Amino acid sequence: MSNPYFEMIVLIERLHRRFLDIVRIELNKLGIRDINAPQALMLANIGDSEILVRDLVERGYYLGQNVNYSIRKLVEYGYLTQERDEHDKRAVRVSLTEKGRELVPEIRKIDHLEHVAASDQPVEEEELEQIVTTLRKVERCWAEYVQFRPYV
Image (cartoon, one colour):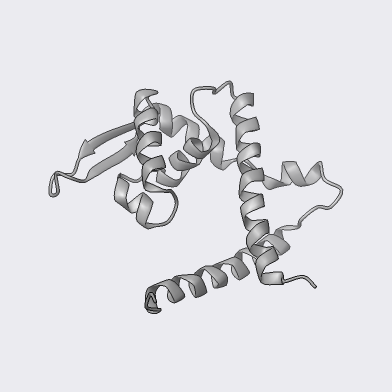
């Protein structure tokens, strides 16, 4: 007997990995070989913001050690700038350089429709909207559980 809840969790993880494969293919098409797919997504998540590194970690996007390594590489390759926060010298702020700002639209324009057209099981826009709504509900449930349940 299957467990839909557990199956959903496994699928989310698998879909994330598949999407990273798609981002990797798109980076290769653009001739970008100096960064990897997770780093490209980090740039897209930062976008036009100037953001504290700890905020990237706290929002749950990345694990702490991976963030520091990726940021160091993105700075080294010219996609990000970093500077100490003026109020808290322990905190580091990052923002995109011109090179990073040029890449982000390319990452964000990865369109599922191109991938759907190549599939024998297309996913329509309406279906995607329903999936997003459902996943947001699951995220809220998990966030509330973590926030309001004491550790035993």
